[in-house]
Picture 1 (cartoon, rainbow, N blue to C red):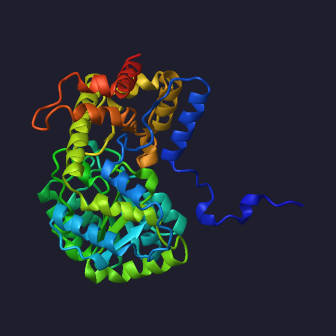
Picture 2: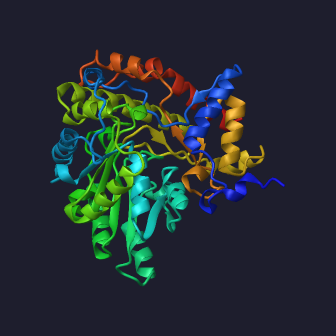
Picture 3: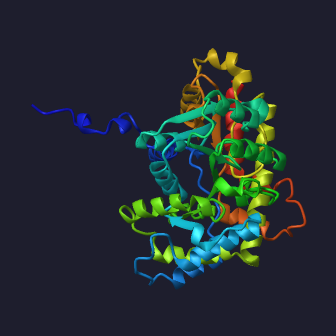
Length: 430
């Protein structure tokens, strides 16, 4: 008698599905293959090309074929450390950096080697909680709200840790800013206050700053500036460098957390061995920066800022609550003001909302429930990346950086995304 194949699955992954961001991308492709017009605002992939100097470096090093050290290419670790010293004003040293096949994998390994409670504010990136559950770690999520701009409040952290009556229990707090899914960030005084709470309870902070260089004003500040002794900084090439498919992420550790770096390296040596050699060599150029890369960054920041402003106005004029982001390429609209109207159409939760929206309009976004919000909350994440980033970048480069983009820029060069959000707004009024 044949046994159900699921019986042999690890209990931690029974019922686990594909990451929602990848699933919505596949679903969009399927609908497109059926001849449907689909506006793909589900997967958060940078629309912009990889900067030419970085591409040239990859071509130059395509012949590199040897296994590299588990921790990463020495020159790259030095470039990453220099990047954080220059960009963030932090005393990061090469020997305290780690290179992995995407920051996603490094986060997974950190949760694997860390033994203790994991704390995650919501809404949060779709993979934090599933990763912890795959490993069997205890996760505590605590909600933020629209009124606080979806930001973690230091007093909320303090109350949570104090209520456990165990001051120095091992804790890992995950922060992500500019945030996926809402693009919000923290003010310096907010980071200082969170740092004070973390220091009080000796919390390790995983600061996911993968979108740091996409702060629209170029004013990203790492919490490590205020809490250097126990902050791990996560970065990589996927967002600010447009190289998601290259799969290269970085972790930077303070000296007293080097035992975690060593533990992750040991596990890495038994799993992925090392990151692709040509990509590591090319990444040196990315993290070294230079004038061409800096200009590239300022142009894409300017485009994203203008597009975010336009889309936020469209949503708010339709009666949908939405904060304009500070960075990245996400909006996290709240349809709660339209709950009664949507309920009459049989829409009572975020999954219903996104399902009906996709079927009726072809606009693909993700429900707030995928970001650990209550299913009944009518929130969703919109990734405004459905435009030709190479064309938009080229158009921006014809306009001096000290001048604003013309009002017509986003409708001309990001028109597909503007049209998608206009369709969404019209749909809610139907």
